[in-house]
Image (cartoon, rainbow, N blue to C red; front, side, top):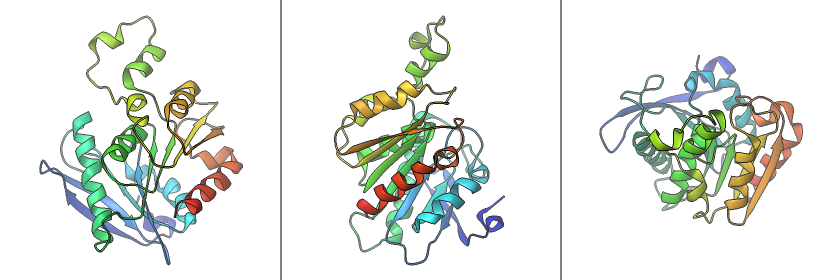
Length: 233
């Protein structure tokens, strides 16, 4: 499925990372847009399963660039933590190319679950007008310990995605959202990330399952989201 089936006009984008991996994404334009949302999806599925999320975000009146990490969807290669960071930097360059005359393109990073960890890392490296996360974890070792408390996951895990240590380095406006009903990534992870984040920051308490857009069961989140974007555009 592609955005066209949801009534959205879009452009297929193929782009290349620093290590030569070919990635695939969609550029979805909005009328008279003043900024772009660079969207980082979670670990399950690919961009084809995010059409409803994209359709919802399109109501913000901003362009959207959503892409698949290496090994996902039509993107080549094999997934790895280091690889996803390269993928994020390459996706940022796609956005920057759309604003060729701007040193710092008007772009928001929006990450869900695994995508939040990738967005946080990119925000440590590249300019963003604001960072939005939903259902983020503090780190993979923390999450593994929560899910499997009887196993020594910290001693053998090689994948870190240590968002908790990285978020404290950011100086951009942040909106951190997490659902009380999230049974995959405990609500406490979102709260700890918010506590570690410097100002300016906001926390939005959501309802609904881990993979559902925040506005689906928490209508008030939409107002928080639109206000955050408007204030930083």
